[in-house]
Image 1 (tube, rainbow, N blue to C red):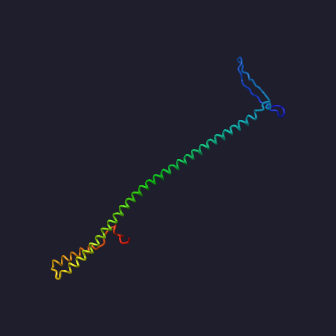
Image 2: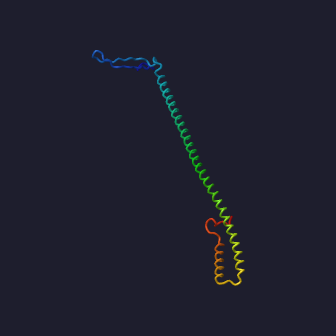
Image 3: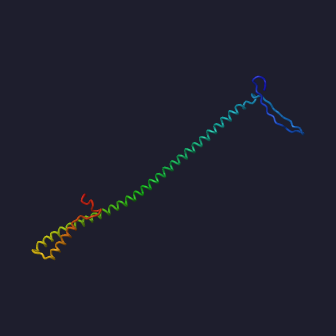
Length: 170
């Protein structure tokens, strides 16, 4: 308390002296200590400043770790993409090699097929000449001729199987 607008501050402490306990106090007017009010404001400003600095450091570290995580994620994706590309390249080379082999086999089969057709035509021609040269065939000769015709018809049938299925469409 005090008179008017004057504020008084007091500080006291107990002291033991010669078996008695005394209280010692000191008083002063608040205006005599100009830094007291400003000191509280300065502490609050300093605390707020350090709080802002700590928040900024945490945010920067979070941003950097997020950037590092994003970079690691991108690197992993690139590595996965590279691995998939290697696998696809390997599969593609195997498929290309298989396709080349199949094309070679196809050409070989087509050549064999043409050769077979030529031989069948020649065999038909020879049969006609042979059958025409025998005026009156014996029973045994007729059976042989029938067997030759039957075998010729069997050989004339188109080949079966997946390979020859669409052969005529090419």
